Image 1 (cartoon, one colour):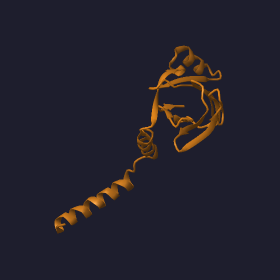
Image 2: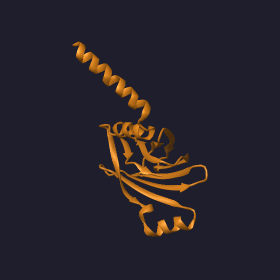
Image 3: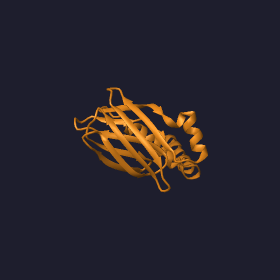
Image 4: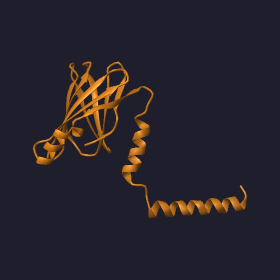
Length: 156
C-alpha cells in the first residue's frame, strides 16, 4: 500500500469512527437488518399474512372505544401450512394463542426484538405463549419433519 493510500485509509477510519459516535445506527435498525437476513434461510417456508383483523373497520372502532382488543392474524406458507393466531393485549404483555393447520406438533417461537418466547404445539397444532411484549413480531414454527415456517413481520 502506498503512503497516500495509508493516509487516506486512516482518514476514512477516523471519519467513520466519528460518525459512529455522533450518529450511531439505532438498535432497532440493526435488529431489523439482522432479522431480515436471518429468517430467509433455505429450509424455511415464509408464511405471508393473509388476514389481520386490525385492518377491519369494526375491529378498529372497538379498539377506539376501549373494549378488550383481540386481534386475529392468519398466515400461510407457500407449501400450504396455515398459522392462525389470536393476540390478546394485557397490561403487562400479550397472550398469543395459535393453531397450525394441518395440525402438527411443533416448537413455536415468537420473536419480538431481542425477546423470544417459546412453547410446544400439541398434536392438534395448538399452542399458547404468554407475556409477549409489544413491537415487531415474527413467529417461527419448527415442524417434526424438519421444515421451519416463519411468518412475515407484523407489529403488536
